Image (tube, rainbow, N blue to C red; front, side, top):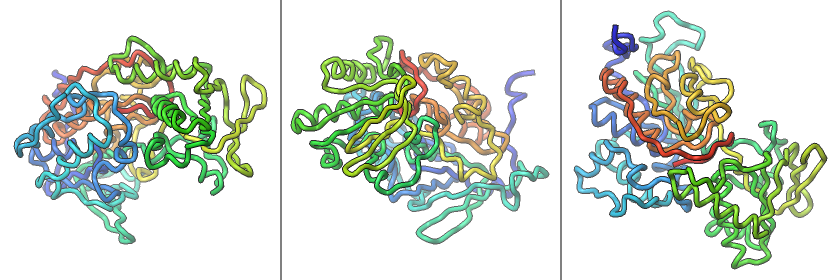
Length: 434
């Protein structure tokens, strides 16, 4: 008996067949999913909470990606765009910034008539369920439509779907600063002095940092990018102080490893290493944050360092501790998530940084992304849960496989092939991307 014979096929009824596939999120992977659905002639709706495409990418758009143009454009999306006269940027080997990715690729993709007609902006998905069923009811579940609750400007609506692809990402749900993973006590005075990962230090956020003491918390590539920007700012504003706070003894993933196939990513580590050695960046390792509080003129991080009580005072703190998936909208969906990284259980062993060498991530498709809820998939960065170093090429292959499965093309869905660059490094914080 062949593997294809054993592969679960999409369940359908006349009613289900008449309903669209719902894609949550119009970021790079959500738009790639739309392109594949268009290419296979599958009716769909893309629900995006923001007023335009790739809103999260726009927030960190001043940052350059690790991957080159040829690795961040989905092949099917490229074919659809080129049919309209669009051309790939001339230097396909150059890594674009986030703003360039949006301006030159994602916005044109979202504006293709066959895709634009399917996107609903300002539509925030607050819940996904089965029509007339909570998660405890089983009889007839696989052939019952999904019910997607959508909030739009104070108005609530429900959309029925044959399948749901959650590509909503994780940028909007950063990990807390506390080493326990718990949220610190809510305090507006604290919140005003803590920024999200990848602030625009040299642009819109310059006044927050110029001439002030900034503490960057986190051991990943988001932290490295911010540290490098702060050093550039310090050259113009010498009173700017820079402290780098990490929980472990070393920042393993931000290293100058020569094994990293993504040259831009390896260079990040080398530059930060030089700044630390030169004393431009004050690195404090082995610091476990237990509390965050406001002071008269700033913010205080309290905790322990090598078992001893310790505090660090700052004017501004950058939370670059990584991201985690927001699963609140999926309460009534039967997901099967790994207990450690909160990724789909079959995918987790491939990406769990506790057991996995980051240079050996295997390509994966619909099988690894399958949940007990038939027809529901988490794709893109959110599929990695809390694991690090998601690459856009991975997400594009995910949606290619899932959409092929939805169309009934099991041979194509099962033929998962993708060559991913080796990272050469590995750690436990999320936040590296692209």
